[in-house]
Image 1: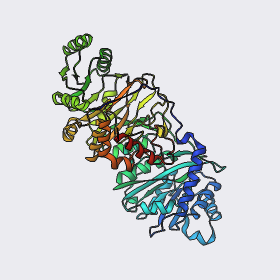
Image 2: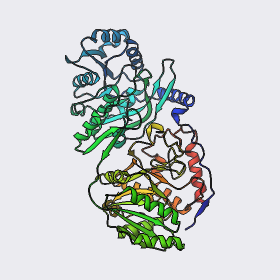
Image 3: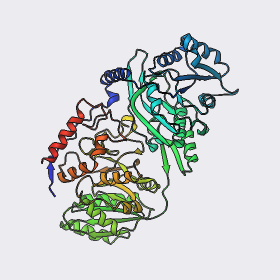
Image 4: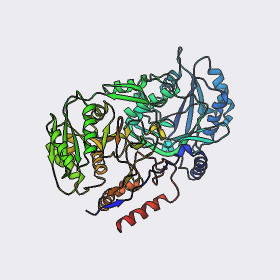
Amino acid sequence: MERVLFAPRELPPLPPDVAQDPVAYATWVRARENVRRRTAPPAGTTTLALVMPVDDARSEAIGRTLEALHAQTSGRWSLTAVADEGRLHDVSTALRAATPRRSRRRIRSVAAEPGATGAADLLRAGLAAHQGDNVALVFPGDVWAPDAVALLSAALTPTGVVYADEDRLAPDGSHAAPRLKPGFSPEFLLSSSYIGRPLAIGAGLTGALAHLDASGLGALEHACALSACEAAASVTHLAEVLCHRSTEEEPPAGDVVHVQAALTRRNEGASVALGPAPGTFRVGRTPDDGVVSILIPFRDEPRLLRTCVDSVTATTRGEQVELVLIDNGSSDPETMTLVDRLEGRAGVRVLRDARPFNWAGLNNAGAGVAGGDVLVFLNNDIEALRPGWLSALCAQAQRADVGAVGARLLYPDRRLQHCGLVVGLTGAAGHPLSGLPEEATGYLQMAVLARECSAVTGACLATRRDVFDRLGGFDETLGVDLNDVDFCLRAGAEGLRTLFEPAAELVHHESPSRGTAGGVGDIVHFVDRWKDYITEGDRYFNPHLTRADPSCGLAGAGEEDAWKRWYSTLTMQ
């Protein structure tokens, strides 16, 4: 196999993400909205019933929302504002003041049941008034883009849910805090209210929504998204900024009740704790009993192997672990002595395979002798930091609809290396947010929250034995590169999810300053196989984010042409 040695390099500073570049974002969002205003889809025949719970809002906020609704390119909408009896008069007055006389028939205010104590009670009353209608949630102060009603209505089906991107609009009209979201990610939705606003729910689902048990506005919109997506036959993401929130909103409260309620409804035996950022959550699952086989291919490098094995052993006491060490032709005397000693340990098996290096082939061979129900493929330059990482991986891998699980990997200097892979990023596949400081949560908290992704790195990849056998293992025609990504994509084609699990945090001693090797043939073969997936865009990465670097910044003009030039150059080598 032809291999290319890439020269050692220093990891460059991570450029700002889209939220850290407000001037560029503000220019982009205004220009895009103006273009869409001129090309808005026809109004269609579907009417969208907007439900607005008014718990504690000033008349100015209601006025901003109404002004944006009256400017919609589609007039097929109605608004029901719900307030408690004591606030209903003031709400009705604010609605009338913000609505031209000719449009007042589509606006109404209703009182919640006596004893209503918060936004959740108000929302329940609004949804009850629209059983059998297509519904969208709107909150006082929200400013919808002019084509929001048209686009949401066009994408909505009777049993579907539709969400779109959002940002925050300051009183001076400036745009900030853009949330350019990925496609539907159920695990991400358990970890955070990433779906946010706007949220539209098909007519067949409004009566199926679970009892919304939430305190505070942030918990309420999260609970509603969790419940609606559980009942939905489809969840569609519109990659357009259709809602501008008010910057005056309070930050999300720390309440796990609604997430725990969602897990209970799904009969998932899991616990919930607050996550590493406000409004985020950590779902803890307990793995089933059974043997876990950890497969570690190596050739010499005794210090790395010793660190890897010792750290794994120290952090997995009490678990049924089998180590399968795959010796790819070591010749260093120190390595051979170390392997002899390790082979004498209980629970350690050594497979000697001196073939020319083929990562896929070596791991397939190791899987052939492994006895575990869960297989964990681990590079020999991995160091485990603390107990719990293996349990977190295995608990995810054992879920019936999961095909592969990856860990959060840090460089030796504790900057982020891996939080899932994006297909088509910086070439065939790349690491978003690579180089992020260890303590940073990253864009949309992607670096620290469990979520779906298209692929994870084989430096630490867990899968069930039955999944591995079903897929035929790793593709040995991709002997050096991208066999891990290919495995995950093939699992996805079988309807299995790939997850990033940040509770499994490890150090990967693959220093960015060390030279790396790559197989050009592997890359060409991979891109030819998955070219449609790459060109269509990774479903778990917003299409408006750049693929030229790992920053999650805005995509630049001509990026698609640059990718085609890269591929053309590659195939000519």
